[in-house]
Image (cartoon, rainbow, N blue to C red; front, top):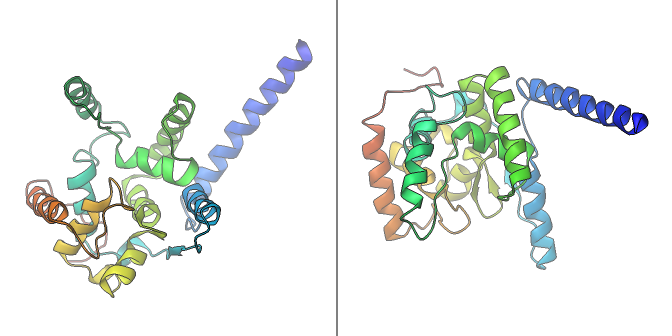
Length: 229
C-alpha cells in the first residue's frame, strides 16, 4: 500500500506540474493544434472523407475589433467581470432547464477555451472536472485578453475550419482584420453548432440570430483588445 500511495502521489504531482507548465507556455506561444482538431480529422478518416483542416493563428491585433464583442454578446455577457464561471447565468439556466425539453449549457468563454485547447468533446463528469481545473488555471495565468485571443484562434467555425482567421478567408474571402460587424455577428451565430450552421450560406434562423447579436453588442460595455481606435 505504501508503494501504491507513493506512486499515486508522484502521478498527481507530475500531472499538476506538467499542466501548469503547459498553461504557462500557452500564455506566450500560439496554439497551433488542439485535441478537437485531431479528433475531427480522425472522424473524417473513419468516415472515408478527405481530411479538411484549415487553421491560421493570428494575434488579436489582426482580428476585427467587432469579433470579441460579438462572441461576448452571443456566448458570455459577463466575460469581463467573472473569474471563469458565471454563477448568475448558471442559476438562471438551472431554472430554465426544468421547463425545457432540450437543456442548454452555461459555459463561459473561459470554460470553452479550456475545453477546446486542453480537453475533448463530451459531457462526462470526468471531463467536466478537468474543465473546471483548466478554467481556474487559465484565468489565473492568462488574463482576459489572452483568453480571448486563444479562444478566437481555436474555436471550431465550420467543417474542418478552426479560428476566426480561417473562417474569414474560407467564407468571406478576406482576413479576420477586415471582418465587418455584421460578419462577426454571423460567425458568432454559428458557434453553438458550427458544423450545422454555415456562415457562408446562412439560414433564416442565423440571420435572425445575427440581428439579435448585433443588437446585444450595442447594449454591453465596449471591449477592444485590438489596440485600434
